[in-house]
Image (cartoon, rainbow over all chains, first blue to last red; front, side, top):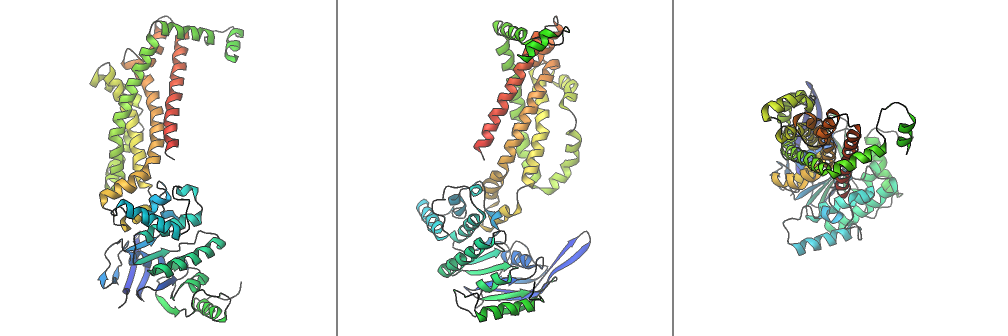
Length: 249
Length: 227
């Protein structure tokens, strides 16, 4: 059975009497444990789709089902990772990671914090506040905070968009390592074609507004992926053409 | 030094020199008036400021949280806010008579509106991602307020409190000139009326300045401890 299925999801926004169609009849299926990238041009509505899947917005038409149940609101079993802006500045690294763990006993909580601090490579920074951390470290804190509650799905909305290109590469490798260890179902929104082809099992390519899913591309290369291999380039160029982009600068 | 020199070289008697002012201060201390007046002024400021904070902050946070409440209250707030608390002096005296209560009321008014606006703005400035994250982790509405909303607004509230305490200290001097018979504001008016003792007038001003500085320093240390 599918982990997630979106059926004919449409979304309209009305502002000042003007109606904008953002999504039109989006159909999507995601298997358990799958890593799916939603790829599309900026402003095409992929973040809106992710917010609907996460339950922060309700669609104008259609429905999203997860484990066969309709999504009616946000749920701690499925955590949304914002860009690093979502880290709470008044809590330490440990405090942020413990945010969703208030129901656990003290010892369990400490263990959970220690485990995820280690997993995202922030040992020694447990007592630091976000203001003292770099962008990449804040992003790790947010990922750790999300993973600490053992969610079965993770939603990431351009999580590495604000990072420099070197840190972004490291973070992708880290995310894959964590995903291979935890095997959550991941939906990852990006406008970066290379990022999508490096990370995902499947890439859902979205059109311009009103967005639909144009094509779903299977990335049949095992990890770790060689980003100069012929198959990688072939898949990437296929998506380039799919988006109607000339492959020259 | 510069002050003393300027005063002794100018033939006009514009300001008393620092030596005279020190003499005036000594006079005040000798008669036990300085401590009494400082305590009287601080007492009024404390009451007016604390009462305003207790009422205005929860009210402002509530109004800021509910968009509709803000739309309902905003016009009234915008009309009352630009009225100087000093314009309320006659009404304060009418309601409370000449005494502590009238000046406490004036300080309360001077603090209430700025604090309430700070609280409203602080709530509305809380980034939506924080609230969405809190909902995502399954927090109850009460827990969202105590674990996310409140810590998110505290830094801005502390800045608002510091600015407002400065306002309170400005208002108390003016209120004491008219509505009471003690305090540093009264000292200044009384010294002028009772025989043009400008040494005491300036002594009062110096004390007001110093205490204002101390109050601000106190609030700043609170601010830095929190960031």
